[in-house]
View: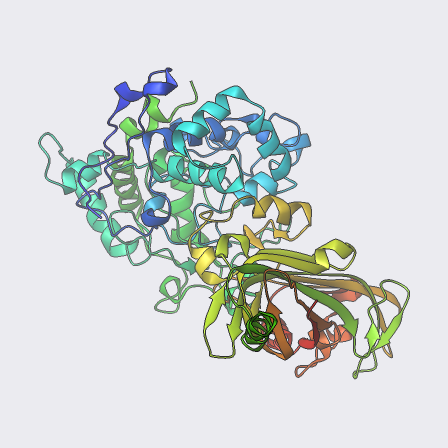
Length: 343
Length: 255
């Protein structure tokens, strides 16, 4: 497969409301030079302009939920890198509250396992979790398909995206997958600096912060996406209201107890609160946890218990420089791109 | 003239016509050892001295293949090759396959669950099977995957006096795929013809799920007295292995 150019939104002129002349346009898929390899199976679901548009409509449609109010976009808010800013735990239908913090949706084409506990490893199927969960959208797939089949706008969008296919769960999931996989954040100041693009400068604090980050954080937060996709116990005190054992829920292995997925730190300035249960409201609180709050336990990551004492030694100055660096990961172009927004 | 007709007729009888396509039915007849499976009321005793009353048995049957005597294999079209057998819905227990090339088939192969190859394709090729699975309560909401087999009911044992719930759900957990492929020789050939629809009658012995080559003691999994809920962990691999011994061909009708 040829990978040409970063997120080229081409063929917009083909988007005329007149169906007879409409031709769908596949996106030219390419990888930013500072990114790791793609993990997504593009051959099984190649994103097109029309598939993306259909996926976007589905993403923002509350009618997928049992009471018609909760869309994907309800908890995944663009300007916060598609997280539920300010909410520790996700909210669902009938005022139900979930048991995890809403994760970001960005650069998912580079991820091979999803959710804090890695309960699924297929992006196109992942939406089944929030759509069907009783504490999230509690949707009924048969009703959703029926709703779409009886909606003229959906019929038109499906026809454009999948001319030879039925309106069914396969194709609504493929469209959602196409929308999600195109949500790529790769134009932060950090990216431009890493790619030596003109006008991308780092201050002294930011440069030093990046160096400290490389020494203190990058053994888990690897690559320019700042994750190695592994599951680790980072020493959080057990939240007894949730008693969430993380990866152990999936594997049932005692050695996986309290392990959660290492998240990407892209747009981390905008995705508060932090951790799987949203317990930390600020980046300062997160770094304070690593400096002084790490709890020992049988499954605590060995990297966090070196030289006999838990945690990562960090001075206040180092913390503030790391945060200065982390803020360079903010990608305003992504956070405000109208192509991704509901209206 | 009469002689000629007779010869032609004899000829065609000796070399059975194997052109065209026909249909084939596969019946999954759920049993418990040598008894028909009776839901809810029938006590069934395991080798571990536990007494099960089975409330539900459902499983996904997939990727059906038929092999002829000469070894050639007909693979049923993958996109049409996913079925849910539900003991409480008699119609679901007979799979009606169509457009099978005429021929004499000597074995059948199928899987229990949804295969890893399909999982890796995501939604691709699944049509509305996900919606069917959700309506049959065979979708694992927590993992965006399928329940491959659901076996539920109540049990008692020497250590559990009052009837206590059990639920066995198999499926993909983490990196363990837990898909089972089963190949069964037929007792007699299934003769698919344009005018013959054979029926392969399979016995599915529910006792094998937890009381097969691997013995799972429900009482040992009755966490806090809340019931034996087996949906992951080491037991799932043992149960998956048991499923490969669960199915036998009892007979084949050719009519």
